[in-house]
Length: 160
Image (cartoon, rainbow, N blue to C red; front, side):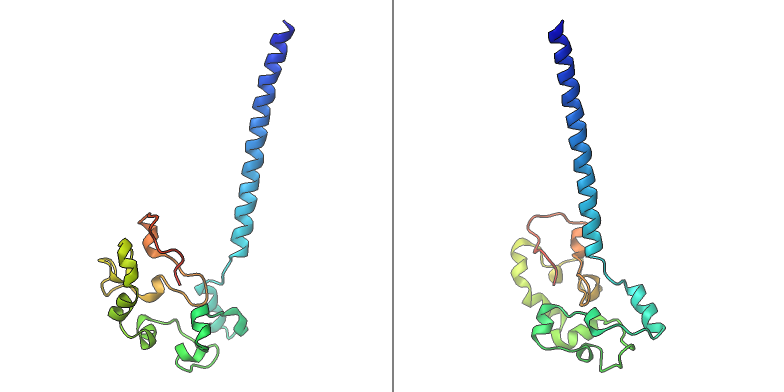
């Protein structure tokens, strides 16, 4: 009789510890996700448009350049046609192609990705109707538009 009581208590203890461990794991996971989201919070396009339209000035440090553009010592005016501060417009594909030459040149330059059939610049989806900014962003993290539908381990990784 004493053995049965101990055995039941042991099962209850195991159940309690399993539930407690699961609960603590969930709390830790949510706390981690929340802190990650806060750390990666970016200024949205809408906030920028609002700020510029109200002539609110942002420090230059709010608009960090990507490392490869910074290495070329580019300034805001290089891409934004020498516009005055606060009068910058969102760049279109034509603006990017002033330096990157043509869509075909970009596809040629990124042909190393064709090995895994993952070159977004040479895909049936790209053709000539996707704009550069749909994947690439200068002042915030870029997005891998392809990965919204395609899940593959062969993908190139972080979008520049």
